[in-house]
Amino acid sequence: MKKPFTALHARTFCHATEDLDKVKTALENTVGKLDVVVSRTEGHHGNPITIFETRLDETKGINEFFSRLSTQDVEELLGSLGSRIDDGCNLFLRIDKQSAFMGDIKLASSDDVISVRLKVRAFPARSEVASSIVKDYLQELLSGRR
Image (cartoon, rainbow, N blue to C red; front, side):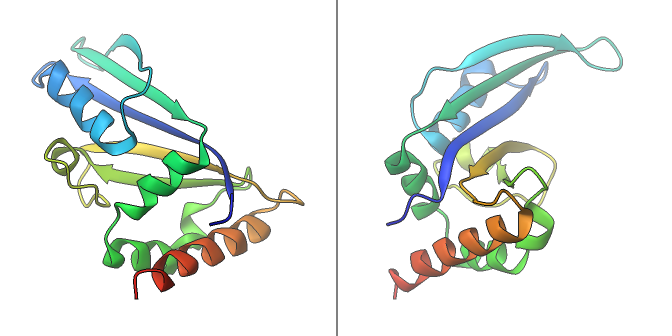
């Protein structure tokens, strides 16, 4: 499989009402057991928020992440690439945090998410080029499932 991405960055928030270990597990279930950077901040009303962030640079790990998405989610990505790739050639996904905790990696339909940003290897670095590269990658992923 090709190497269309240079890196994957994942981030999620753990609110005071959530269990730190469970949120970290959800992140690890999504991208693997990597070094996690933990930082703390406060919400609008002074509530404590813990932020978990990690980065994946290996093509194998990034391919494994995509291979865990359902065919339906990959097709949804294909249909929404225009709104998911920015001018900096980043692809943005939102993974359902509750499902990830249970080991099911799927696109989110709520606001309780693990935010994933993938840097697309695009030359020249333009969103149209990045979109074409990601489209080819996802179509190749789908064709391998048939």
